[in-house]
Image (cartoon, rainbow, N blue to C red):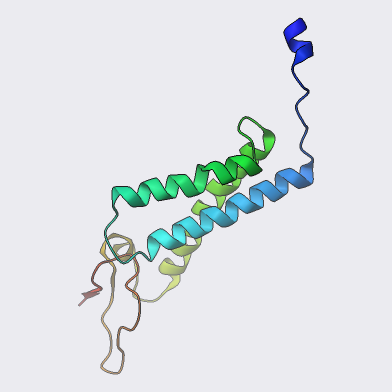
Length: 132
């Protein structure tokens, strides 16, 4: 009884705060997938440590204290942003002529015509593969 009375009452998050935390999480999740998709080198342990620090580090916990509704909304937003990026990518790859699920595995795509060239980033594959 006395312990319950001594603890301060937990602040109740408004719906707007929860939506904001979820939207912030969605933006972070979207950006995390984007960065991992366009990386230039192989995945290393330091990348995973950096990712965990960015997603659940001290700054995030300062904004959204653990075991609160805001942290829960952030986590839901984080997952939804991450998987929304992937879902949109799947839809766009399936609609693009000549592309299929092989693009996700090793970057396979349709053969280029003589007047086309590969310029810029590599995306998912380390070396663009061409299907004959």
